[in-house]
Image (cartoon, rainbow, N blue to C red; front, side):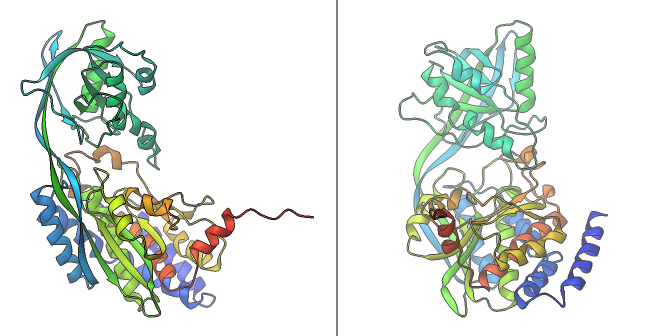
Length: 466
């Protein structure tokens, strides 16, 4: 029903705008309409899910993903398809298990956090110190957790914009070091996930230089609640934890392709997603779908008509462990980026776009707002603050970015877990997101809009009135 209503709205909007629309808006509308029926994005995510699967940076599967991506971009008609290698420290997961040993034995569903140090081969055991919120852990005094396993069971709220993940991310990222500063011997955190499941969700941690490195893992949401229920009975809880892992020097690869501009080829409109994934699932929504959206949008925008500016796709090689952004920024510090965008929030429909500062009121972006309105997408009154982890260093260096918000209501049910699989991808929602991206790419690549100048004019001090 929703798809049918969307098509009726699009038909009415297109008919009403035919006479009034200029060529830029008309081209963007044509790209939008093509995107809603184009198979490129779904075929892409299906292929990477089935032919490659998990793509943890530093593994054999990551090298296979590199070769797959080179072939795929070439097959789709991109030119200058190439690989940019960069060094990383790969973290490779080994056997993992945990159980409650007191007051009675119960197996726990856990997964090690990326970058965690291993336990001793035989594991470690300790009484837990339970914190219902991360703030409670931070309030614990130094030394109060000596010899204990710190456990944080704060649940993550379900939100359309994914803000619950951002709010709780420090519990996973910084929690191990905060627990270690207070004397803990290990750290367990409730998975940063919505809903209840026995599938735990992994993700990277960031050890701090001034704290000991302790083993750290995520509990499934159901097992975190089990521990809460046991603790409510006043029982002392002891847990045995065993994590194995290794680190080694390795190489990761960012894969790129272009549709060359005809008039201003050195000016670059770049979109992308990350090629790597975590290892429990097949990386279909994180970030197979993000790559698929960027690739399909670039292809549709670039084949509607030869673009004025170059359209580039970048498939970043090691986002999950935080390596790709610095390597890419260093390799491309001399590039003339018009605007950049990164897709990394799953496969569901777009609902909001944040534009580079100062550009919202321009004729080009007014056209864009009109083009995506029938898709149910609003242009935010607030300027974009960035567009993803892999573009963050470039944004800090002054490159303009646009950001597409997709419905994240379901995304964190599966993100970073074994449930990140192809069946979660809805082709109709995926194509709606592609249409939102493709219309922007088309307008940015076929106009002379200067996002840098516009952003600078907003940031510059305004003269006082006499």
